[in-house]
Image (cartoon, rainbow, N blue to C red; front, side, top):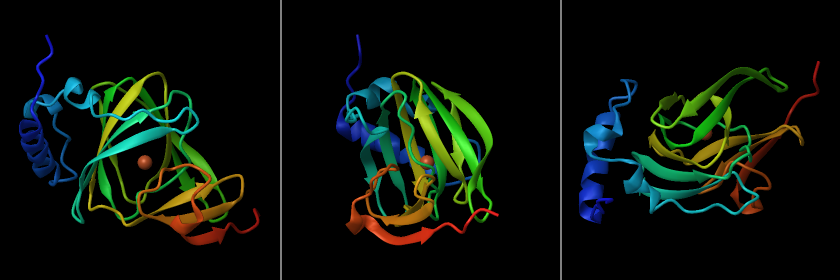
Amino acid sequence: MIFEMDSTTFAHRLEKLVAKLRDFPGAAPSLDLFGLDVDAFRAMAPVAPPNVPYARHLLRSTSEVEVALARWTPGIACAPHDHGVSNGWIYCLSGRLRETEYAWTGDSLVEIDEHVRKAGETCAVRADEIHTCVAEGETMTLHVYFPRSESVRLFDTTGRRTLTVVGEVGAWFPVAPERISESQPWPRSR
Ligand SMILES: [Fe+2]
């Protein structure tokens, strides 16, 4: 039998997790320690349209912290992006998430590392990191960022430009024009 957690209990437990994670870059604690498990999140996770990488459900959004739950569409990678001024954590709640890290050379992106995050694993996200993620099968993730970024950058490898985007924008193209605050063309490759 699955225990159905009431919303007040869930909010209280999530608050305790956020308070613990505020001590970044300490190790991310297991969700079990807070009485949170996959079933507590599964019912809240939205389903993404088939052609986009993920759908997000915001659990907390203040200037100090953003907590979002994501359900991924298998095989659809998000665009390379950074996280603005935010540092944080990704918990892989279920499935598998393949993450590719990039470095910006001044005129292009180059892949520098790759990791697979399995259910139960966590990874840190640094503000200066550029990455993409793609789900291998049904995957849910929990994201906790300090502070909430008011803007992030998306790297358009086809159009060779970097977009600074604002507001609640998914990491994929096209981007609604009103969400683009800056579009910076990449210099010609040397
Ligand atoms: Fe990301």
